Length: 305
Image (cartoon, rainbow, N blue to C red; front, side):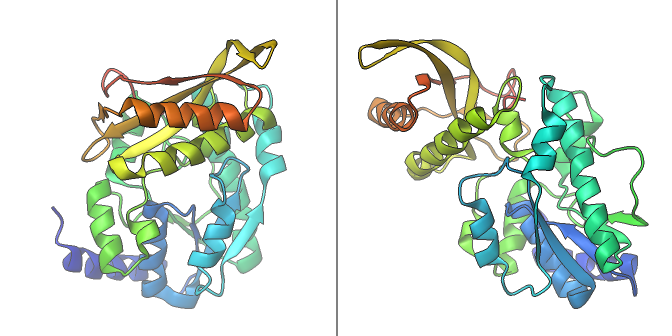
């Protein structure tokens, strides 16, 4: 386990040294990784930092509003509405790796635009150790590591937490006095709901995935999972009222883990699972089935894509 006080001191010194008299932007998503990196960088360089939250249209329910409330103390916070640009870039794309690379490139282009407006030469990211391991191997590309385009218009990319595991990041977040809603928040993928939708991303699938994930996070909070999620995985036949429908299948997943490198599916009681399926199918007339994923990691990954 990292010595938190020592890490914070060293990280702030490293950020200050790398950026010098320059200006930086930070990719802020609202998750614990990027939020902790933002807090570190803000303490280190203050007004030399511009936090940038990009609303991709792939975010959790209420995410943008939560960002505004949590980081309103950072006067330079920028919120970029980019849903149309992301969905246009992803139109017709079904391959998981291609999705990640498209999202990674679009993120960078959005950050480059803001960087030119504020004259920033550096990009700060909340990359952590498991991100690098999975991207350097053959598991998947993270949008902020293996998903980056070959040409990036920044003088440097600063990753103060690149050697930390998730539980260590949480320790740092607590020491920086980040709100509990941030420090204890379960992981959410950088590419957002895009990796919780099998096949092409559409507005309809996004609506289903967003509400289903909200239901799952609420209902499974008492189980204290490492990660709990819902994914739209395909279509199947069902019955709604007197009508036969061919609707979406939503898979619910909840896992326990220490660092995300391996994970075990949680045992969830039947009553809770039934309540989840009732809320999800009740919220969307085009959802036909809800299933529960009992697969550990390995052989599965935690996310679906």
